[in-house]
Length: 209
Ligand code: SF4
Image 1 (cartoon, rainbow, N blue to C red):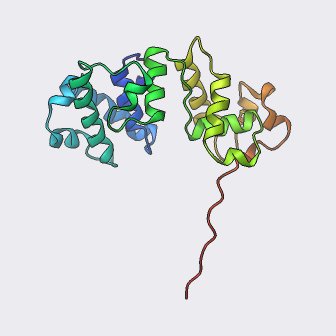
Image 2: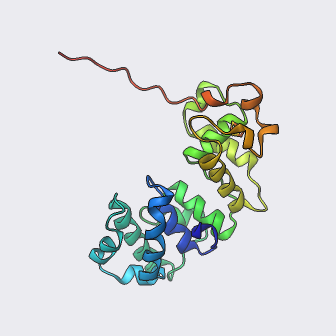
């Protein structure tokens, strides 16, 4: 994937925003075209919003494009066009939350920050057989992810976990027979992998006549 071949913070940032709620297949043609049209933070920041939305047209969830544009203007004005290198400064960029900040900083700058998305949560839950009620929320997953993080290569580690969840340890029918970490997987050993992670309880349905 093109965003796995780069250490450019801007390129990683664009890929992380495009991949939110969108499949890899849908993002691929947009990613390269968008970066050709706006090759740098500065180039994106200087364009009017209509141009950015036009380049995003068809990808959906347009608030992402607006936020990315506002974020680029912030980075251009306050950080001379360079994505910040600290978590605190990255979190002050409009539209950048903990997930995006950690992904960009770990992949582009090797910052030792764990990334927890749906794929990582599922892999961790199965690998460590996390079944307690506390694992219905995100917080404990960050703690587990931080304990396991490879501090020498945090970007590769985060991407490997995400990729494992997206391609092998899939939500239904995990392909344990092909899994490179099967020998260490407690969920597989205990035969409960497919039932994990435990999902948050949904509020009961209220019937009205
Ligand atoms: Fe997921 Fe199966 Fe691999 Fe465990 S062995 S991490 S459940 S694919």
